[in-house]
Image (cartoon, each protein chain N blue to C red):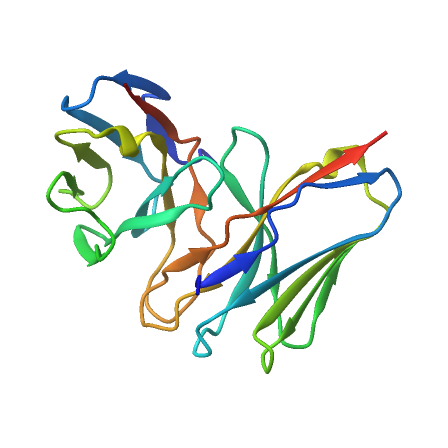
Length: 116
Length: 111
């Protein structure tokens, strides 16, 4: 079974530039998550989608970050404009369901972003 | 206070040693608990869930103390391949499947 796919794997941009990341979840997984992992820290949830609807975006810096999952499958995460503190690995994960039931989350390889 | 706290380590142990990691969580409403493993420059992967009665998977034993809001992971007979960061993870007490990750504990098993 194919895992969670992400691209690009690496990205270097200058501050104030914009960047977009793409994620393709495991087939059939209704729930998709974007995490930010800063070096030396655990992943932090940015946004969670259930199909194409947002379930939780409480930790998404909405002045500069946006995400969409238009057809309930692939998703993109955008940063505009980027700041130095956005340098991190952006992880996409997917799981079967939602709500009170706990389903294992499968992570993609991540996109390593460096903002200079 | 952080939602999930772990000792960042590193823990440097010889092969064959037994090592224990501890974790505390702040939200008493949390219901589900996990240990994830993250290899260097790789994505996190589920190692095991943690049940109230404690559970074992080969050389790995996880325990939960709800009264103290404390989770532990014990690794017996450490292997070189166990070298990784171990993330303590707690499911948020709300209706979503939101996971709260600790900062992770780095384990380095030495030959």
